Every structure is written in structure tokens, then in C-alpha cells.
Image 1 (cartoon, helix red, strand yellow):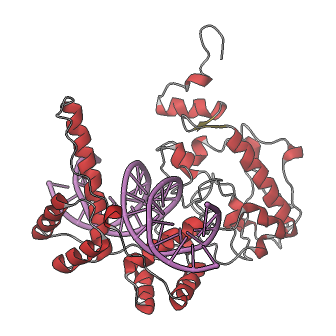
Image 2 (image 1 turned 90 degrees about the vertical axis):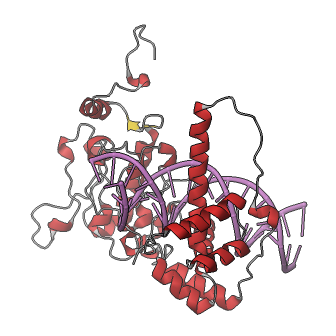
Image 3 (image 1 turned 90 degrees about the horizontal axis):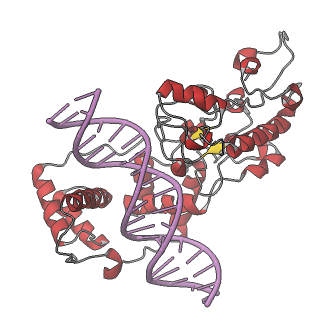
Length: 340
DNA sequence: AAACTAACCTATTCAAGCC
DNA sequence: GGCTTGAATAGGTTAGTTT
């Protein structure tokens, strides 16, 4: 289960929507409901269509204004749903309980779940959707520090990335259960899988492509740094030149199934931590300490982040830039006068 | 393959309603 | 007035469909 099945609007449906858009690009919920009935799609789909159409119109206006800089300067009438007032839905305790319970199981319900919740609560699906959005923004996943209590203390509900606004979530945050699995312990330069623990949710897996560092934490199912990477560059190529701590289990122990453990390619890393800084766990009981080390490594990575270009500095940056045939960022280029 | 676009996301803001 | 929270916005990504 993932997204709602994509609808294909007929030309007459589009015409109707456009006509309504002409009249009012910001329809209130009553109007949207009326329109939904009229063309036979859901109110939330109406909402989405208007959002998209406003964006398109804005873009067209912008492009138009570029061509025709000197316009009349006449303001179009501006409608806002707010100005029309909107009825506030009052959730009963019964409804809230159902939603909270569902939220604790899954912060990112897909359309099927939302529909089911809508049925159970008697609320429109669009209200369920909004409720989850609000809930996510106001009830972020448990912060990293709780790790001190050990991974077992983390709630089962933390299945999805904590893409909250302020702090980058740490990999530790994503560890969800007593299967503090080796996968979860690998640094994020490893191929798909490590830290990508959102698979428990119903969302589909986005690709690791992100261009804006400002958006870095918004849309990564890898809840760490994937979003910081420049487009087309994989983490292994640029970002994680600084070796993350890894578990160093005694070699050759036949009792260990090392195939599933995050062992540790850092001998060859150009920026490998000196041995003293590498965390060496003797067994899995050292996991909390390992995770702490991981966090520290992670913070040091952040400290080297170059936000305006989306690169880490400096050595691997050059490698990557050579690959991309890009000039180095200004602050990494030696200036003619030798200044920085 | 590129363009288009519905679906979905976060961040932010406004405001209703309760205390 | 402060707080909680439903509702709306803008601006972004993802992925299915069309060209």
C-alpha cells in the first residue's frame, strides 16, 4: 500500500475545475465538497488539484512577467479560504483515540489505511490526512538522546524517519527494535538498506537525490545525510570520506555470522579515523557505546558540511568535482592572492 | 527520455476554542 | 492571553502517465 491510485481527469472534469478556479482559486471546504460531488472525485483530490493549479498559474505568471516586465500593475482579486471562514472539525475522543492508535503504529499511513480510518471514524479521508500531517509536525519521533537508555527503549512506533525541522536525526534514532541489526549500524555510505528503516512504513522509497541542503532533512527516507548529497552523486562518492566508526568484532570467530555485520572497510579510507578513535566493540553488548561513537562521528561530519555547495570538504570534494567536471567551490579554491 | 502532473511531504502560519 | 490543534498555505520530491 502506498499512495492513492492516481486518477486521470477527463477533459470535462478539467474544464469544470478550471472554470471554478477562474472564479476562485482558493475554494473553501464547502465549495470543494460541492465540486467533488459534481465531478465525482474526492474532496482531497480537489484540494490537490487546486494546489497544483495554483502553482502552475504562479509559474506561468512568473514566466509571463519575465517576458513582459512592464505590466499594468493591476492587482487581481485575491481570494483566500481563510477569509471565507472554515468550519473546524471537532474530533471526538473516540475518533482521536483511533487516530492516535493508528499514528503510533504508523506515522505515514497510505491511502488504504487512511480510508479505513475514515470509515472507522466517520471522518472524511482528507481530514485524516491533515490530522496525520499535523500530528507528525507536533509529535516528532523521540530524540536521539534517548539512546542512552539503550535501543530497546525506543518505541516500536518509530518506524519512519523523524524528518523534523530542527535537528538532523541520528542513525540511532532509526533503530526501532531489539533487532539492533547490523544493517542499522552501518554508516550511511553503504548501499541501500542501512538506516533505511522506514520500510516499515507504507511510503515508497524515494531515491537519494537532493540538491538543496536546506531541504536536506525533509525528504530522505534515509534519515541521515542522504539528502545532503548533490544530485547524481552517491554517498560513497563524496559524502562519507570520513570513516564512520564500525564494529570491530574479533575475526575468525565461527560463531559469528559476519556476513550480516557492518565490517568495516576503513583501512583504505583517505580519512579513516586513527585507531584510537575507532570504536572497537567486543560484542553486541557494546552497542549503545558504539551508537554513541556513531553519533559523534556524525556530528563531525556535519561540522564539515559545506552548505552552499552541498559538498564535504576538502579531499573527496576534489575527487567528486573531477568526476563531475565542475570547478571547486570558491572557498576551496586557492585564490591568486593566497587569501581564503 | 523528457515532460507533465497527481500524490504526498515538511515548514509555517492562522485561527477556533478551551482554560 | 496562552495553549492546543484543525486547517490552510507555499514550496518541495516522487512516481505514474503521456508525449
